[in-house]
Length: 392
Image (cartoon, rainbow, N blue to C red; front, side, top):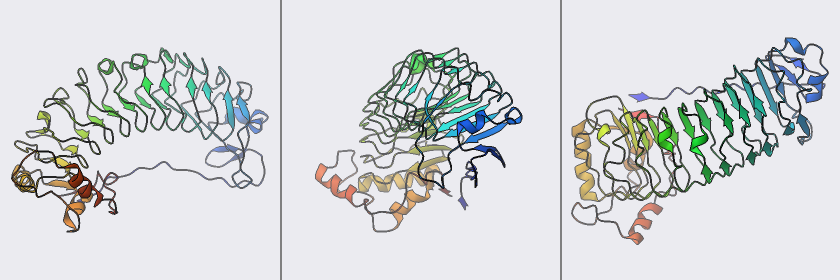
């Protein structure tokens, strides 16, 4: 039986324009902010897209967003501005008290200034993706009820202290695809539930993670982590992704405090030994453990959860150990493997183990390991995009 994950994608509307006038379709669409400022019907608008006509020569952002340009947009629920801005004035959104979704993308706004986002009492989402943001001033987000803040694909090096003031409802924060080397965890709202720090330059997990007691998802893939803390205090954490870092070891009881953990991704590191966490043993809900492309030789599957989903490909397993592992996996009932993981091992063309004597966790010689790993470079299976496709 083949099960595939339902994917819900964001619908994108495209507008065909024959003039620079504001037009109404699924959403009011204007080509420039000045079109908005001088339109007499704007008090009735609830959704607005401001975006240059892509049919003409590439447009360079040039506007400063001021409160005067947004004057009269009292009933606006959704505001999208793309490829228009070079600066946002403090208190620019003073007249937009009904806003629930604000999306600014593909602009060139290097600095988010103090008091830029103030008093968004019913705001659900603020997306500032891909705006070339380099710095956020203290107090940029003041007294707001923003639920989801997206700062991904910018040029941030640090998340400084005190950028959030009286932001008690922020539950989801993405700072993925930046240049982060440091983040002040203490400045984040304590009720944060989802934190995404993927594709940055962090070489250590931020101090103070234990303060985020309500955190359920933490992803820090594609960074430079060499070690992990014991995650004290994160008892509600369900998803942890630290794939594609430089982690070479984790302690025997490293994840045992994470009693609600259902998804653990350690793929693409340099682990030579690993103990399956105790909370991944016994009966329970389906859990996912991704260990592909490490340096593992053997895993003990005694007592493993029968609903466990695994990826194991790309490790230089000891061949004798692998025989034992496969038997134990079948006995435990944890026979669910991702499609791609099975493809790596089932084509008959890829090395799945290293035959170097009796079952042992001894490290494979570097030269032999590199030869083993090089065999995967020409494979077309997207192991890390097919993780949620299963075979029973």
